[in-house]
Length: 173
Image 1 (cartoon, helix red, strand yellow):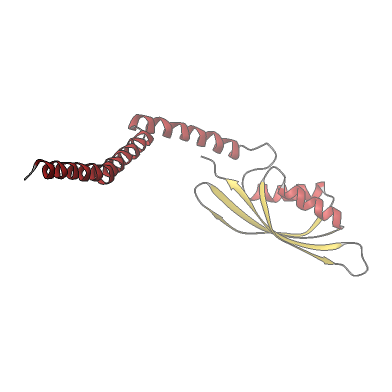
Image 2 (cartoon, rainbow, N blue to C red):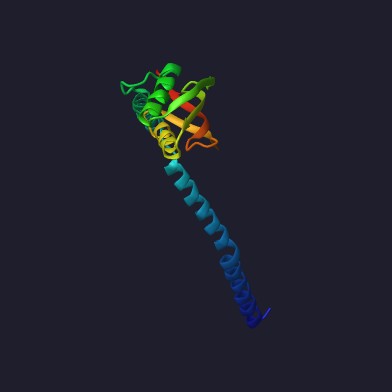
């Protein structure tokens, strides 16, 4: 083999080697580097057992403070079915409406919240009924009205209203 052929072969092999390094090897090392960076980020995101225990205590303290603020009685109404009935009657009194009927319905509960349903019928003018619904939903007990039906009385400015709702009572712990 002549020196010229040997030199051309050496240059060709060197160029091929540079091409392979530039295209294949560097890409693989870059992907390995990216995977390593992702692993480092994930590892930084993990909390140590001590930090987890501390975070759990902080969350439990927050939960207890929130639960105590929710279950505190404001001195007006008891946190039970009787208190809900008293609350509804108080709202009716404040809006100058008298209930024709007030019927508690089945309640359901879980560990944290007790749901007390009710049905109400009453008679009154439109604005007083609107005030009643506003007082019920925005008062000191958490109440959600599910259904409000208005019907007109013959030859009368009054409306008959039938309402269904649910009061939510936070269980004491």
